[in-house]
Length: 337
Length: 253
Image (cartoon, rainbow over all chains, first blue to last red; front, side):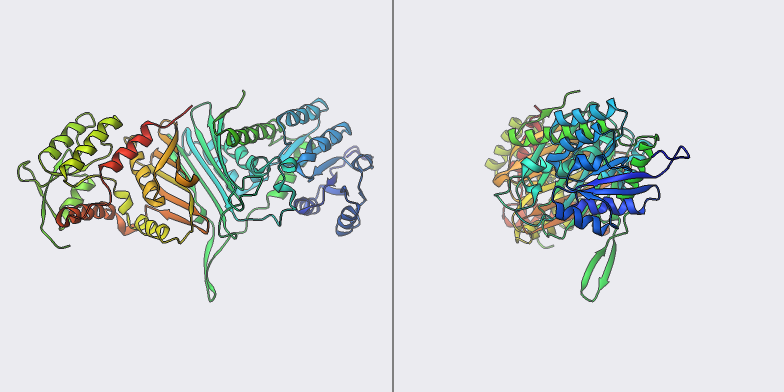
């Protein structure tokens, strides 16, 4: 980031992992005036080379250590499968680079805390890509609750329901050894949001899961995650990739407090299109959460406020792991203070 | 509406209560003030007096509608339900939500297989009436969930958040329900979502706009039909017992 003038606002970003989610991060990097793509890394050389070609001939490597040593790399966006997060994070911290890492921060609570400590010790920014925090619906709910719209929140419901999106049995998300299970892969989004909205410390998790699409699944494609908070409030999160029809895209928020209630129902956003082929919903153009997220992270990297402290991402991992255990044991799981 | 008009005595209701309007506007009923002339008694006595009042009405051979919770103690409620069965009169809890037009349509759709096998229900009943006890509202939500999925409740967990009560139910076949009931100033949320193997059904029980009172009218029609034809009503005090057990026997540990 340093230059002869003493300050270069542009941040050189190395993108690690070149899957579908990386494309969204890359698009955000290309659009941001202060971000510069410093290179791409993928364990599979052909994928790394293809991504480099698709992104203007950026440098590429299949070796993370080598790429971290390239000049111009100030920070890293990591989009590798979840089980690689801890190893990548440790390497990035050791190299003295800032990190924006796809959620979950890690697949174990110990690894999550290890990463938080590694970056804190070196004064580096570690951010987990809890992108939903950067969507307008989530920000507006947070702002309304923080402004007292419902008084003291007693119940928060968040439902994100959809059909099957993973291609086939080869999808790494379906392997709990790689993804940590659906609780960690997608559940952390909701667990983080409701904790952020509630503004209180979670104390206990009770969860129920289903293998709705196929009995042979090793993950729960439908999750119901109930989080209890210190002040007596409760949150119910539903995260589904097992709904029918497969085209379903359903998001619903309800917050009830002692001073009022707030609803962002599923049908509050889309327009209705009456066409010759039938009636359909016309979704509104959502805000670009990836762009907002990148901007917030770059702001923190350059010494500004950190909107998503790494400790909160670690808490989301703790909650997701507790949810997984609750489903396995059929009982609530306490969350340590 | 055909058949005789039934004389109904309303106990414990203020003139402004929606059930008073429902009875007065229903062609099958005429509101009376004397115990002796009444064939039907609507009991909205305070909960402490309710079991005794219901019992007396049943023993007097009246048909009875019980407002809200039948008895604080589920065993007392079960004893009253058994008495009603022995007596042979028509006795119902006032669980009118199952007769609300959108809910009735949803019940029929689920029963016809339009969403395949139901596997989950989510429900929210949040009232603007800040005097409403979540436990009193909960019996309506529990009954509606049972009516929608058509399955008994086998296990329940609860979380009391003060003005909101959360109920996590388990039915047969691994079907689950989650109900949030309570109150908040200005709130008006009453909805059920049923997920099935082949579809999903989203029911807004606060719609349609013209349906105010339709659910109570539906319950009264069910009562009237049962009384005048002898056909058993689709719900009985056994349903009140079941709803009460769900609320009182929920595990929180």
